[in-house]
Length: 204
Image 1 (cartoon, rainbow, N blue to C red):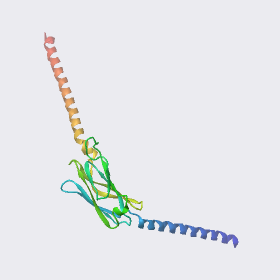
Image 2: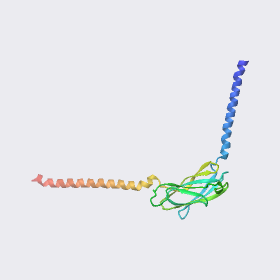
Image 3: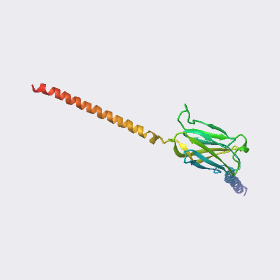
Image 4: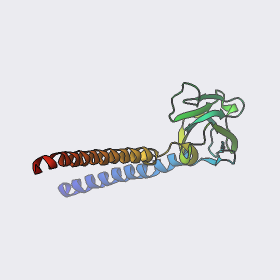
């Protein structure tokens, strides 16, 4: 009886341990998900009639928003609420490379941020009309150290590579074809001239 009982007891203990582990694994993510900031920030707005971009940022998380970063292309001015420190890269200006950049705003004191169930406005002015209206992802950080991203936000974007260089590539191909046609035409003219020059001497 002892030999038969020992494996059964060991199997029961193993089943109990696996059950506890499975229960912990199943409950822990659910509890963490309730506290995660994903999906707790809503950003609406985009380009207006003047060509500028304006967004309303709504905080539905338990911690204030203290940092936000918008991607941009060819913006020359970034707007943020009073009390927010602004920093931008590749704003349109003399000597600045023409490439995509970011516009960020942050506060040191969480009380100056966007509190739970509150909202604030941000915006940027575009220097040139060539910037394409597209969508992108905005980074948001909270006072409790967590962060999230909001995708699908209307932003000033670069043009896709293919349409951007399609005209240049087409002109290059056309020029190459014209050069080939001209070279062939000149060869035919030289052959005709050579043939005409050698014709009378052979006849005499």
